Every structure is written in structure tokens, then in C-alpha cells.
View 1 (cartoon, rainbow, N blue to C red):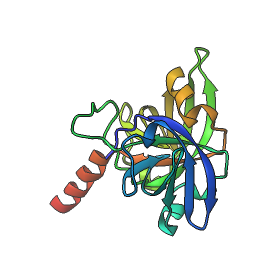
View 2 (spheres, helix red, strand yellow):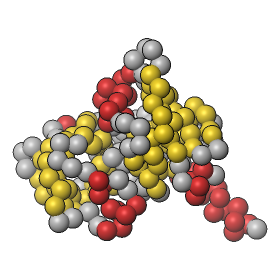
View 3 (cartoon, rainbow, N blue to C red):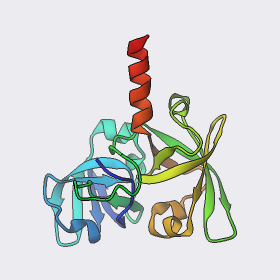
View 4 (cartoon, rainbow, N blue to C red):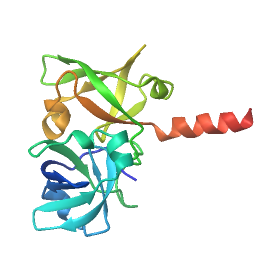
Length: 194
């Protein structure tokens, strides 16, 4: 379980044969082979570690359901270690189980160093999104500013723009989306209740 509060922006070193290697430093602390790390919102297991990198095996399912298959050496990735019982929950509960890939439809600077991202969402996810609700975008816990017929708009403050990959996205870029866990459980309970 994660919070969507990114600890550092790492850099992809290598992508080959279902293995992703990321250069990083902050998330290395307390991390060993077998640990979980959220990489752009995808919960991955560490399978290799050096003094400056972490390596992860990535399955076909993960490549099909996320944007990790599009990663190239030099690309930035958002990294977060899992929460502990002593961690403040600054974002929202994020599992690291990406539901789908959205598309950055527009980027509008706000004049104060922040920006608004308009993100198109697959129809299957739109029912889980509400104004002022939570959404994880590339592993970043964000608040939905407004809901549109085809997706959402999200305000990104200057700090988030600076310390995550969201400050360098371009129109048309894919982004990993994880809908709010509570919305999915409520839907499932209502289905069972008839």
C-alpha cells in the first residue's frame, strides 16, 4: 500500500527482456531484494539492487495495463516506498495496481508555476471519478478539480510539478491511472446487494 506522495524522481537506466532498471538514491534506504516500490504508480518487486539502482521484473500483464512498456533509458519515473504503520497518510490509499492508461489531452499553465492537466480516461474508469475525489496519476495522489465527459482536469501545484514527472509531461503522453479504491469497493458491494 502506498500514499501517492512521491519520494523521488528516478531515471530509467535500462529496459530489456522484461527487466526495468532505475537509477535512484532516496528510495534505496531500507529497500532490499523482495521489497515493493511504486514505479509511476505500478507496484513492482525489487529483484536486483546496487549502490545506485533498483531492478524490477515486469510481466506482460503489467506492460499491457500500464505505460511502463513505453519507458526508454533517460525517462523519469516517480518512486515511492510502501507505507508503514508509522507513516503519515498525506495522499490517499494507493495500491499500485494500475487500472488503465489515460492520455494527457491538454496542459494549461496557471501563471503561478503550477498547471492544470486535462486527462482523457477510458470509459471503464470514468464512473469512479468525482469532483474533489482522489485519483493516482503516474503514482501521484491528486485531487480531481473537475470531471468532463471524457475525463478529468487536475490542478498540479508548483511543488508537485517540480518533484514529479508531471512537470514534464506533454500533450498525448500516456499516464498510469489508479482509481480510488473506496469507489471500487462501494460499487462491488452495491452489485452484490442488488
